[in-house]
Image (cartoon, rainbow, N blue to C red; front, side, top):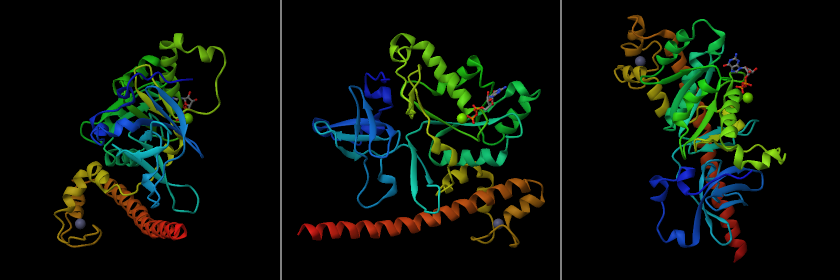
Length: 349
Ligand SMILES: Nc1nc2c(ncn2[C@@H]2O[C@H](COP(=O)(O)OP(=O)(O)O)[C@@H](O)[C@H]2O)c(=O)[nH]1
Ligand SMILES: [Mg+2]
Ligand SMILES: [Zn+2]
């Protein structure tokens, strides 16, 4: 199946990216968007282009300088070799599963993150705060979607609790199987906009995605002859073009994001606590037993929920731990990168 892309703006290209180029760059190079990442190549797409190119990575071993789904690359217009990775609007990364502390890039340049939970026992404030922190830290708009509204008598109770999580947070309560309900997500799925879903297993992410892409099939039935002929491939596309012109980024890694280096996000989601901490007597107050701790005082006065404080401490501890090991790893990779570069240069002599 081919994407229908007539101009770069269809893929979300705007001045954020174009301002990173010199006009002369375009004489020899073409901007393309990474639609799929495979072990040995990347599928990149553009208005007149849909091809496989070699992976892009940084010789110095900088983890974040590899290309991932959603990235913009400049490729050589003749040889199609990737030349340059453009700066991102946003990036999600995680530690690779297993013992190594290797960073895996999950997705770049997402505009809106739909955080999915359901109106039942999955609804968990700590989990939602965690996802909100990730989104806000990456400057991504977060929209909360509460599914299974049809299975409870009190969907508005869940909605009200969710709305308390952040000022001006949009919360959509719906039945994920109902196309009319799911249409309420479309305002965030306009031309060139990239959206993604996160949430625990079983909350209805696939159901929403099927409902959304089901609309696409109905709207574009005429041009999708491929499907009728049964030329379905088994490889899962990672970017799905929606009938509204938006892009749905659907990649499994999104499910296991950890908090790494997200102090700014924590500061926004827990703005009340962060503000109080500034008034603690000791600059390095741990808000445990220290005298003149503004946070402990607020808890005692009933102005701050003790549970909320504990959730914040837990997320902060996770972030500190991961950020520490990330910094160590970066330092090690930098040294190793320089070393390999020098060895390469010396063998050339
Ligand atoms: N009644 C009802 N069932 C739902 C809703 N959303 C999801 N489900 C059901 O919940 C189960 C898990 O949904 P799924 O989309 O696979 O969840 P995922 O793991 O987040 O992708 C499926 O049996 C869905 O049919 C909903 O809004 N209402
Ligand atoms: Mg699923
Ligand atoms: Zn304190």
